[in-house]
Image 1 (cartoon, rainbow, N blue to C red):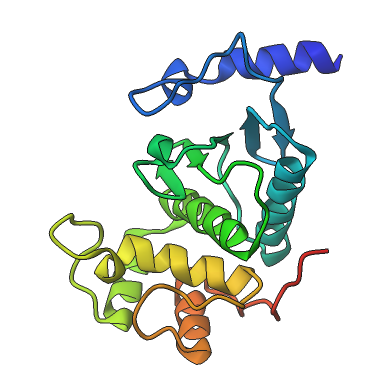
Image 2: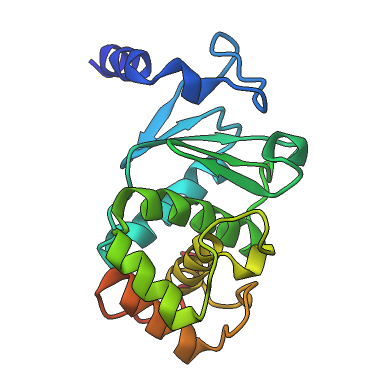
Length: 199
């Protein structure tokens, strides 16, 4: 039954999510896919990677934040993430951290999943309220520097709030009180208590 379910699930994923100019994905050579909640994990090379994605999905579920179905692919080389640790496109997250599992990797994963959550859940009104609160004029323009883009600030606020809170967010005005207030505006919910250590 598991094999049949997995085959049907894989056939249902649009081919565009699995390929593209920044991927060297080879479905025939890849390890079988594993589903963790709404995340379909491809090319997991280790138990560390599987545990990492389970931890991240649990963080979102515990907070009541609904992630959309997305494909996640691990890579060893940051070239597959446009020279970054992670990269998001609608329906897909690429994580270029190999088999590492440290605070920076966990933060990167939560950040990229926050982009998926934002696209699937944030309304125009909620986005405007967040931009006003944070004093931002650009949502995701390449003319604005990375820390001044609303789309990136949302991801930093969510990843910091749901994470271990041991790394500072890479945006201005990242004191805990400001981050938690921004989280409430984004989600309409009280931030979960933290920090959240890895079990």
